[in-house]
Image (cartoon, rainbow, N blue to C red; front, top):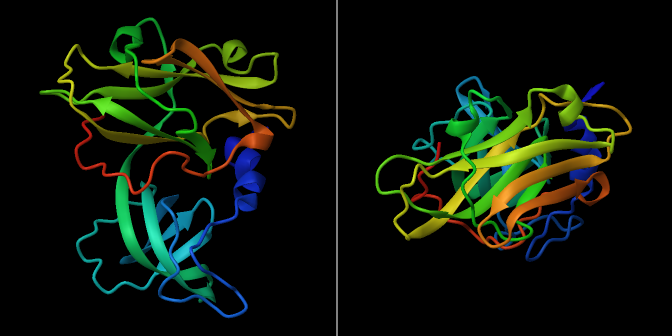
Length: 247
């Protein structure tokens, strides 16, 4: 059995980063910057670096990052200006231009006792805004904001392994949402990244099938084949996550 991280590693390495102007033979310029990319924070001593799903390890050279409270394992969305390759043991030295923390969670187990708390309320997610990279399932959606308490968004598995690892070759998961009947009609971007490394797979595993209650299409099942998984953000450009209310 292997960890799911390794299932997607080859695909993540194959994702080519997009720059506005870049030529590795001539190096990078101040005008080179990436689109929004997923990364994981790694703390080392009193400093931190980013393990980017598409670029590998990034060492930030910013001198004005004292405001940022780095937490090991935190998922983030980042935009950066690459400066040098192969920098002191890291894949790249970069200047971070944008850095936002994203709600980071584990896969949870659905049981009769937890069914009500997980809920199954509809969510507004556009096609392409769920991706898998770096051993995580990453989701952007438009949250119908609450007036009081945070909504709960959960990625859950069956408590029975036979249902989780079905004989069709896919891992079967569900996205569950609980709005606690508290909706204001005001929308803002929400985002969550789920650590998939707790899921064991075999070499024959084809990918993931995800059930969710879509606000537009009702109960649907989305298939993520092993060959088609990537870390590109299809519809989201520099999302502002400051208004989201999620747990």
